[in-house]
Image (tube, rainbow over the protein chains, first blue to last red):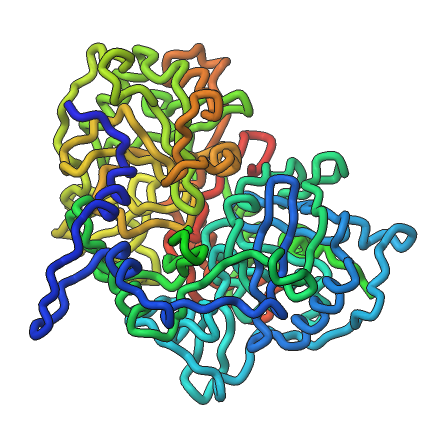
Amino acid sequence: MPRLHALAALLAAALVLPLAAAEPDATPAPRTTQQVLDASGPSDWRTPDPDRTLYMDLEAGRVVIELAPAFAPEHVANILVLAREGFWDGTSVYRSHDNFVVQFGDADADDPAKARPFGNAKTQLPAEFERSAQGLAFHTLPDRDGWAPEVGFADGFPAGREGADGQAWMAHCYGALGAGRNLEADSSIGAELYVVTGQSPRQLDRNITLVGRVIRGMDLLAAIPRGPEPMGIYEKPAQRTPIRAITLAATLPEAQRERIEVLRTDTATFDAFVESRRNRRDAFYKRPSGHVDLCNIAIPTRTPDEGED
Amino acid sequence: MPRLHALAALLAAALVLPLAAAEPDATPAPRTTQQVLDASGPSDWRTPDPDRTLYMDLEAGRVVIELAPAFAPEHVANILVLAREGFWDGTSVYRSHDNFVVQFGDADADDPAKARPFGNAKTQLPAEFERSAQGLAFHTLPDRDGWAPEVGFADGFPAGREGADGQAWMAHCYGALGAGRNLEADSSIGAELYVVTGQSPRQLDRNITLVGRVIRGMDLLAAIPRGPEPMGIYEKPAQRTPIRAITLAATLPEAQRERIEVLRTDTATFDAFVESRRNRRDAFYKRPSGHVDLCNIAIPTRTPDEGED
């Protein structure tokens, strides 16, 4: 009997299937995700702007973050000040809450004697839970969910919208980066941040300011051991995961920046990619689902000349 | 400025809010999750049957699994044979695929010279991707999703259904335990298993046999470092996470069994619990979402006399 490297067969199959023969005058044949990506062109990919890309260096490796000024301009501006001033260098991930978030920043922020100074950063910001949908290019998904009237991608980020004249907001998908706050809506300044590591907590959408998204390195954050205290907190400093530094990519010489490209979310290739996730066409699947949730769409990244991550 | 233990405020607030005063003749006041659980009675909880409960012992601790014979009777019967014969004792978690699954069993299963014998277990089983909904008590959720015509809970497991006369199936939520297979639908026997550790891969529903669910210890499985090879595989034995043993609870003396209770999913208390997840009522939330996805409902567990986990 064949032995099982089981689910493995799923992606393995996708990798070995030959490309479907071209049928220029017919409806395009359904394609697997791998086929869609193999057929993508240079214009289907974008390079994140180094002026809004952060590198978070852990002992285990580097996490790459793309900030979202289109959604949270004031928070992102403050985060850029904090990064330039080295605010997070030597801080830690002091919370890992299973199936929810990791949280990081100054673990001593509550202690006036130890708290780090904010330097030139602002200490009061407005809540940026949502923004006007006007002026925001929104690429709507074919499928809906129960969390928002409309879902799709805007500026490369998963998002919800209530019509073109209503409000729009980033969605709490895996890898979303948010600004921790107290009970007051306007109590976040971007110094204390969390990243979603579990089932998308969409109930937080429009309740907290999201500021960006991890585009590489989620494998490092998601594997941080869960904290022993309630909500995954680590009270003992030695248990926390040290953050060597959080650095703005633009402050490094170009040769030292990460080489990374992200699939654009506003192209025909992206539509084909989404369709390949809605209906899995590789041999493993017996019943394509005909649906995909917003947060089940992991936006592909790649290293130029090396292929997808 | 108040400092931030941020998202923390969410649950902290839930814990300190006083119970709403009883209003016997009015519509019940909306309650927080903590209030619902505090008001639950003994009959709202159940003790999993030791004849279908497995303990998976890792160096980091114990994972407790509840099997689902109502959905996969042949696979569960085979798994019980394998557990009684110690099939998994000394095997490993040899795959940890970020935002997807961990997979475990006999890493040498593909090598005839090293593969473990199956003993009295069957080596061929039918696919059990779904079953008739008839005869299966199904507690439907108020909300829908795009993956299934109907979602809810059956026999304590998250599930989908296509009407009372159609098919029903378990859903790939966080913690779901499935039987790895090859490309052939009937190529699983339950010896090689996976657990969902990422955003619910509901596209696998009705495409693979789910056999149960982790009810305690997901924090241990989800934090296993991601494997370096494609699909999170660990090729080097030393990198794998050893499994000391997988033991059927019923084979241990009662005093050595885990004390654990699970919230029933077919009660008025459960309905109130779901409502408390649909509309978060603690002070942190400014805009309750009025919706919850099936896989965002984590069924509470508790240790008798010690409270919720």
